[in-house]
Image 1 (cartoon, rainbow, N blue to C red):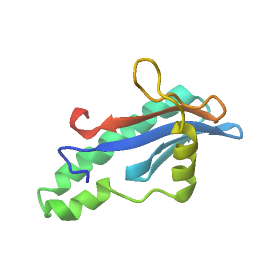
Image 2: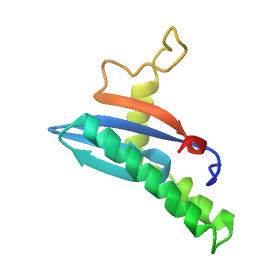
Image 3: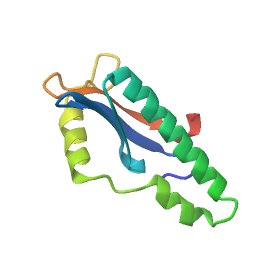
Length: 115
């Protein structure tokens, strides 16, 4: 379970038609744009803002009330896309390799303690 101090969230940037879509699955954040690098940057900024807002809320609410913001259920569409993109072998360095057959530009798992 994610808290404002620890946990992880999955993210990915993929193409749908002419649009690039960035998703932070556990936060239910979605950004779109024409450039995948810009979408990735905007998604990471949105995730940081989401976490900072959750931290501010813990001042007035019980932490377990706020933690729900960091542990949302992602839409089935995004879960399916995540599964398809990451069900590949690992690289020689030990990391996940995004399937070359998917339309995913990048995907990863970010640590909340580092943002």
